[in-house]
Length: 194
Image (cartoon, rainbow, N blue to C red):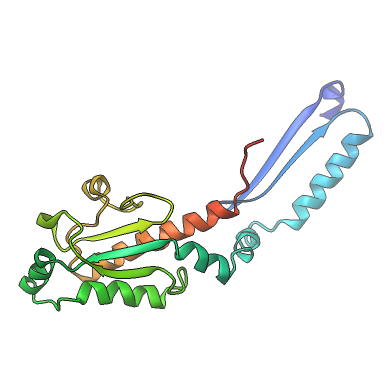
């Protein structure tokens, strides 16, 4: 096969993915000279080093507790404790602080945030007709932020609506953990501004 393309250069780009993370990327230029043999040898050596079943470990090995904490500290979960939200919890036969304690407990037990996300019982954060309401803030953005996993109405409001039961609190917390993970991955990804 190479005999037919000896006069041409080939750009070969091989990317390996494990759990949706780019583990390694290699780019080689092959031509008819001795660089061709070296490039193929380097490619083979690189391929031998990467085990697709363990590829994500090289990425996760870079994620230290210090990095997790520094990224998680940028988030603040605001649990509305205003009259409307408190009244709604009482109508559902819930404790006034049940939503707050649910989010607080998940934060302390989380392997992702390591308890570093600030959880605050706040005053009214809006969307009172959709109470109880929870909002998330991030220090790099003004106001409340929409997170992946919110419904379209919640995303438009940048607030989680009707956070009443354990399943609702789980959904909120899963969205927060996902956002922290995305910020961690973004901090590990080198800028492509060249």
